Length: 169
Image (cartoon, rainbow, N blue to C red; front, side, top):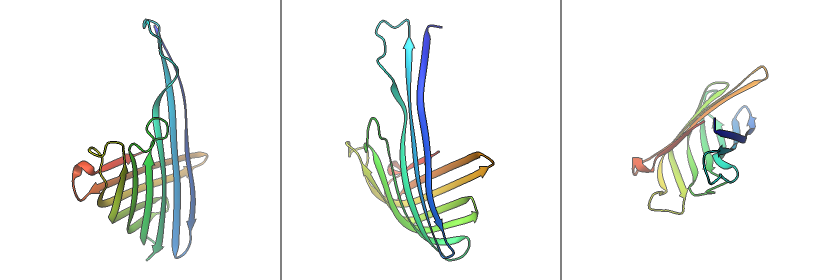
């Protein structure tokens, strides 16, 4: 009863896709920013302003040349970081080649065994760039006026599992 809270937030999922008979080019941007302000009336020193709670920035571009209706040779560039508190600390840039499988219209799965994960960070002892495999699964569906989207992006380092990372939204 002695606490009150307020929050502000927004999410943007934007895309630009070009799907042709022989090739495709899928581009996506995800931005998710949220702040919260907690006011504990029992605390002598009040909190100042809103605090960042969610800070996600992700942009990706996938190009593929179709070998069949469901399989393509592809190249992917994906960049992930935060914008508000620690821009590019860390930031991850994946660049790789491999195949893309499209089993159904709304789902694509990227398997790139040749991928380099560039890591940008202030503390290079914790974060290191490395060669590895990239796997992305993306499902987007619109039913009526409601849009559904889920995305898994994983990098498995060939050097050490400590250098691997994944994000699921």
